Amino acid sequence: MDKLRIIGGTPLTGEISISGAKNAALPILCASLLTADTITLTNVPKLNDIATTFKLLNQLGVKAVRNSDDSVCMTADQVTTLEAPYELVKTMRASILVLGPLLARFGEARVSLPGGCAIGQRPVDQHIQGLAALGADIKIEHGFVVARATRLKGAVVRTDMVTVTGTENLMMAAVLAEGQTILENAAREPEVIDLAKLLIKMGAKIKGHGTDRIVIDGVESLHGATHRVIPDRIEAGSFLCAVGAAGGKIMLRDAAPETMGATISKLQEAGLHIAVGPDWIEASMSTRPKAVDMRTIEYPGFATDMQAQLMALNALADGTSVIVETIFENRYMHVQELRRLGAHIDIDGHTAIVRGVPKLSGATVMATDLRASASLVIAGLAAEGETLVERIYHLDRGYERMEHKLRQLGANIERTTH
Image (cartoon, rainbow, N blue to C red; front, side):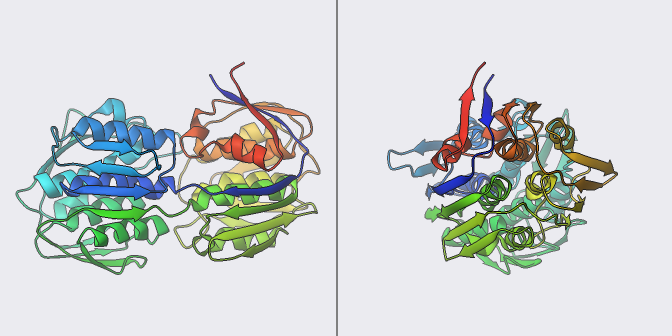
């Protein structure tokens, strides 16, 4: 099983390019089910979660091809089955995003309920309630969500909580529904906006994306389109935390700083010098970081997907910080591993108190989920001696060749199988 071997203590210098956003690409790939025409996508990252989505869509009958110019072409003109099986859904919960498109276009879908999630519960009941409000007949049978509707009907749908995948699923379902759908309490994330932009290019009528009230006027059919996936704000934020912890000066190209306000603000508070342009971010750090408090909240607040990385930075900071996780109930599994590197972190329910230490020391640690693995890499870059990060298949789900990009910045890091 692959591991990352890191010799810490080297400041990061140089420039890298940020990849396309995983969390934008996944629903966009599923949107190909809404038309028989070809969808052409660029800036689709090469990640395990993307490969899983290709596999799922291929199983449904979608022709998914990555071309020599790195564009991706998706054609769903011969969908052969309307079932997403457990063996694929269990490895990636975002597979639930095929439910809305299949139901909207074909009037039927059979999607396995996702299995357990390491970082906490991610109930799909909001998806189910929303689709039922649009007129779907939905049953849970033998571990599957079985949904049917001759044609969905527009309605006002207000979710009980802000849910990104729920908003995306309902938006994809509503674009082919009869009449007008209003999504209240909608997610405002940049990835939701990116999906809406693709759907509009395909002929959908959507207004209000980026606000908590999205209005969709259903159309009879959608057509093909070409779209570039937005840059990954979480990947960019992770590299900013890395230079904050290890020191140095880096340039991030092909970034989207306008989507990263909360992250950039917190890192500036921690002492990073950050300059931004339309598609670049320059960051430098020459001192020990300052401790910063943080509370995760839905966009445009501080993202739960950046909590672990900022905690790694706070572990080395001057002072004590208080971190509150409000999104997932079990997203502190990286704490035990950071402690192995010498971090002083106490947990009380949803709150973590981090007492910064002057230095961390290398050790063998184990990744428990995607963002936890990034936090351990960041800590390892700053730690004295050798850090070995095990179970990095979690990292490969959401970071495209992270060790390669870190080597470009001068880090002493390599992938190993022993």
